[in-house]
Length: 142
Image 1 (cartoon, one colour):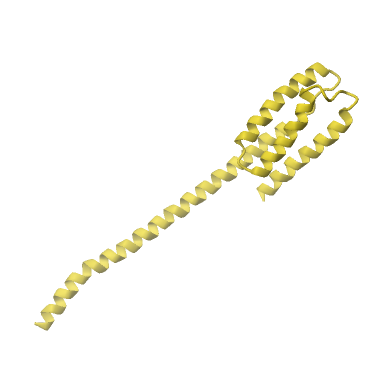
Image 2 (cartoon, rainbow, N blue to C red; image 1 turned 120 degrees about the vertical axis):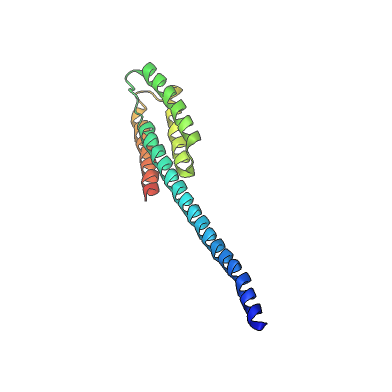
C-alpha cells in the first residue's frame, strides 16, 4: 500500500514539477523579450538623438548676408520657424535649450535689430551658440 501511495504521489508530482519548470522557462523568455525591447528602444532613442543633432547643427549654422538687409531678415524669419519646430521635436532638454538660444539670436536678425555694423558681435555670439549645440551633441554621442 505504501509503495502504491508513493507511486501515486510521484505520478501526481511529475506534472506539477514539469509545470513549474515550464513556468520558469516562460518567465526567462518574457525577461529576454523585455530586455530585447529595451535595447530596441535605446537604439531608437540614440537614432532620434543623432538625427536631432544633425538637424540642429545644420540649423544653428545660420549666417545671413548682412550686406543685403532685406534678404537677411527674410532668411532669418525662415530659420526662426525651423529652429522653433526643431526645438519642439527635440527630446533632449539641453539640446532644446541650445536651439532656443540660437532661435532668440536669429530672431534679432529677423526683427531687423542686427545690421551690418552690429553684425561682428552678432556673428561672434552666434558662433558661441553653435559651439554649445556642437558640445551638447558630442556629449550625447558619448
